[in-house]
Image (cartoon, rainbow, N blue to C red):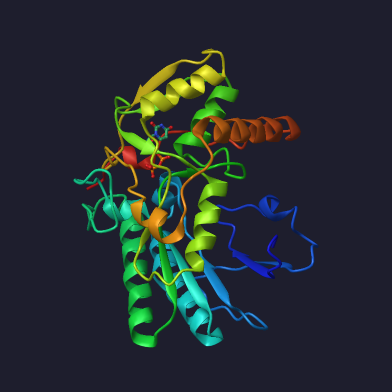
Length: 310
Ligand code: UDP
């Protein structure tokens, strides 16, 4: 919108919130439609870009809604590809580092085919995104549709839901409530956290490029989850402890993007350090808690994936 585009946002609000676009409501050039991408959609007027970001991205959410997750990657992706095709638009698919599964190559570059358990609990997410990538490539090859595929690594920032369940909001939520931080496993697994504004810039640049194969977008600054817990504790004067919980099944042990390709073809790399990004994010959540008369919606941190029913 800052660049002068007209934007139509679709969300079925299964995990999203109207509050997140409240500041855009009523602005010329913005329209919000409550809609599930798994049903066909017609948009009046010309469309020149489709950004297909619809998915349940948090393990807590996709494990609670595995079928909806598979549908948004399959039927939802096809509906968005058809929308782009009807309008002669380009489509950008947001895929995921989960395509690499529990990776045997580190850091992960786009040429790595991954190590995904196709029948594990996380497979509803991983395989829906892998299918979405395959479908996107098939539309490009069959119809010549201009497409881009971003493989997003752990991203965080304001407007995440505090009860989202992912580690950044989970630890901040716990710290604000002065509860111990729940570290799964021994905390030696690694992640690399990218601030949302960096990711958005990467998506916009990728949507302008002619690159049809996947491009990693993420911040290569890798840390263990235990180090991350210590970082959050330090922000709260070490006033909260750490509680170790079982490691969910198939939880990737190492994750760090190789962003050589994004640097080369998009001239992109993250600009926001974890220190800066966390300050903005903690501030956002602190204000939200203070504004809410009821505090946070409560969700237990017991994750369904701690038990493998297989
Ligand atoms: N994690 C944790 N405590 C939590 C939530 C997550 O230790 O309360 C760990 C989780 O096991 C994983 C990492 O933090 O190793 C990142 O988890 P998240 O759910 O944010 O995203 P993922 O990378 O697994 O998709």
